[in-house]
Image (tube, rainbow, N blue to C red):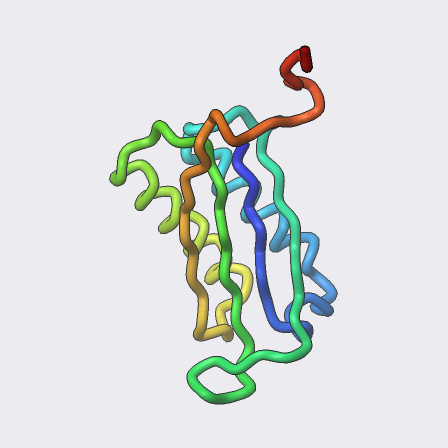
Amino acid sequence: MPHCVIECSAEIAGHPDIDRLLHAVHEAADASGLFQSADIKVRLQSYDDFLVGGRDQDFVHIACHILAGRDDDQKGQLADRLVRAVCERLPGVQSVSCEVRDMAPAAYSRRDKLRALG
């Protein structure tokens, strides 16, 4: 945890240094002190068809899914860190945003933590 899903325009996804953006988001989440580095997942989803303010304009939005339990201040600081990391790597992109979303622990499972099915 967390799952940082970077959504962006296809042009950004094709940037030669996109790997640096993925690492910058990972480092920003790690620097928050809220997670273990090995637990942070970052992935990219690009879109060919989109509008930003009614125009064909590059964008980056991070949907950061975390297990519930952090307070609003921690989530706000995390969102700010992630946006700052993107802005530093892509200074020409005007539309950069992030939403930190809580996931209910009872509704989350993963391979290494499967509950025994009776």
